[in-house]
Image (cartoon, helix red, strand yellow):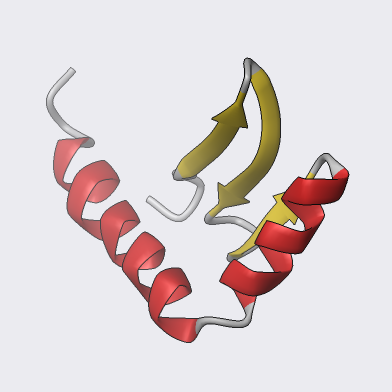
Length: 66
């Protein structure tokens, strides 16, 4: 169960600007705007905690369905 990864990508105008991966535990920006947004989101512990909780709620509960 430790190798399950939750990924949330943020897009603007069909371009990926930032991505959260649970393996890193933070956002990574891919554009100039995305880097700014990633820094803002990474400095807000409630956003990071909510995304880690989504991994537990969504991914770990659906492991045995398939």
